[in-house]
Length: 147
Length: 147
DNA sequence: TTTTCATGTAACAATAATAGTTACGAATCG
DNA sequence: CGATTCGTAACTATTATTGTTACATGAAAA
Image (cartoon, rainbow over all chains, first blue to last red; front, side, top):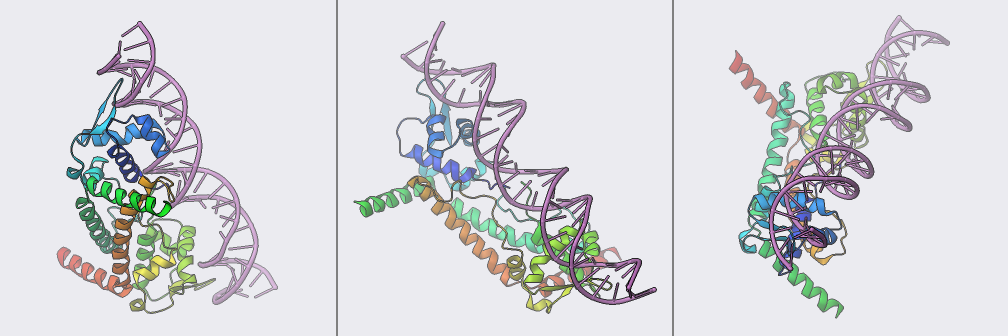
């Protein structure tokens, strides 16, 4: 199975938007992400419904933020994407009849639940402004190295 | 994509084995797991190579433990299965050229790495004996409820 | 020794999720 | 009106997991 890269992809797109003033079209972003404009629209649709970004049609249209970067957490993004499944590993049966299997599912399920809670807390505590700042530091360091 | 249920499945199988004295055949286990004997052999093969279980052919053959349950951690099992990929979410590109994408990958990647480390620590601290004890408590409670 | 039982393994099919593509409709701006 | 851009449905491609068939190998029982 392919891994779900929508969270990374949409963050990548949003960071490019953050570096610009004018709205970016789906084609612009598709070029940045090395993918297709329809994939961009499909992914961004959830963010629009969540009030994170807005889209405009026609000339001068495209995607732009609906609120400040510091007011958008990675958890907001994750939720807007439909809370994609975090773990690739999981139980064989959701509601097993076998009591042995129930016991195994409980132990593994709790471990996964705790790990997921930790991840979500981390997402909740990171904003797009943090991400943008992290990028600017890295970009500066990169320029210093090559210059 | 289907989720990888090998860890849960093999733990389910091992718990059934733990409840028995004699070796269990792949067909026995396949019946317990509601799957195919070949799937059982394929999955158990890694555990055999890791010295966790042993298999015997012919009459009286089948699967049995190679060492005490208390000496086998869930991490041992996880490793024996070939360390299956934990997360379904992940980066779009492993080694991106775009510095923006690199920055996003770093932030998300570290969050996932920490969550995975926490999960592995939990697996390392749980043995099959713990799992079996957990099951016996649950089974006892179940009998008390219904009786 | 022959038969039966059981694992070992390769090869292929079935299932399911993600991502990419094509096509066309709808809205907006000049 | 016409160019641009989003919105969306439908289909294809790719890939991982799981299930199935077939046959070889080894070990114990008859």
